Image (cartoon, rainbow, N blue to C red; front, side, top):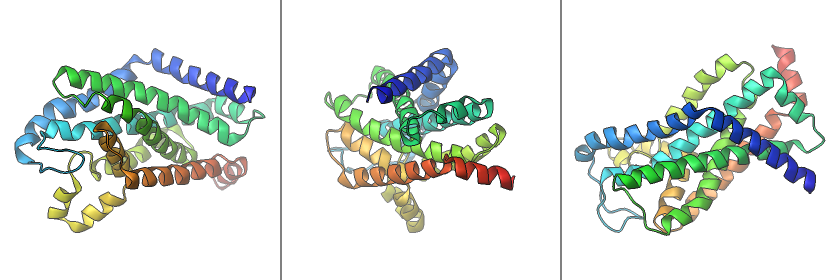
Amino acid sequence: MKPYLVSLRAITLREAMRFVNQRSRFLAALVRPLVWLMVFAAGFRAALGLSIIPPYQTYITYEVYIVPGLCGMIQLFNGMQSSLSLVYDREMGSMRLLLTSPLPRWWLLFSKLMAGVAVSILQVYAFLAIAAMFGITLPAMGYVYVFPTLILSGLMLGALGLLISSTIQQLENFAGVMNFVIFPMFFMSSALYPLWKMAESSPLLRDICALNPFTHAVELIRFAMYEQFNGTALLWVILAFIIFLCGSLVGYDPAAGLRRSQRS
C-alpha cells in the first residue's frame, strides 16, 4: 500500500508545483468564468427570464443560475489542460518513464486524475469566493455539500481529457481537438441556460444536451450547492467516468501505442 501512496503523493506534488509555477494558468482559470459572470450575465439577464425550477425555491437572477455551470467550466478547462501536460510529457519522455514503473497503469493514471482534480477544486473555491464578494452567495452548507460533487465531476472531466490525450500523437494537434470537445460540451449543456429554454427552440437540441455528460456534472454541482441530491445526475457522471477511464486505460496500453506508431 505504501508504494501506491508514495506515487500518489509524488504525482500530486508534481502537479501542484507545475500549477504554482504557472500563475497565468490560475489567473486564466478565474478570468474566464468571471468574464461570463460579470459581463455576459449582465447582457443576458433581461433576455433570459428564469422560472422557478429545482433546486431553486424562488425566482433567481441569471448570475445565480450560471454559477454552477461556470464551476463546471473551470473543471472542464482544467481537465483538458492537465491532459495537455500528459501529451507534453509523452513527447519529452517523462511520461514513458512514469508508465514503466512497477505500479499498475490504472493507478498511475488515477493518481494523475486526482492531482488535476485537487487543482481544479482550489480554482473553483477561489472563484466562489470572488463571486461572494459580488453578492452571489450559496447557502452556508452548500459550500460543504458541493465538495464531493466537485471531486466526482472533476474525475469525470479529467478522465475525458485523458481519453482525448491518449489519441493525440503530437502536441500541436491537441489544441484543435480540444476545441472540438470543450466548446460543444459547454454550450450544449445546461451551464448557461436551462434545458426547458432549449426545448422551446429545438426539442432535438434539448435531447442532445440532456445526453451530454457535462450537463449532468453541472446539475450535480447545482443541486449540491443548494443542499439537494440529484440521483440521476450522479449515475450519469459515474457512468461517464467509468467509460472515459476505461477508454483511457486502453488508449495508454503499450500495445495500442505500438499499433498507432506502426500505422503512422
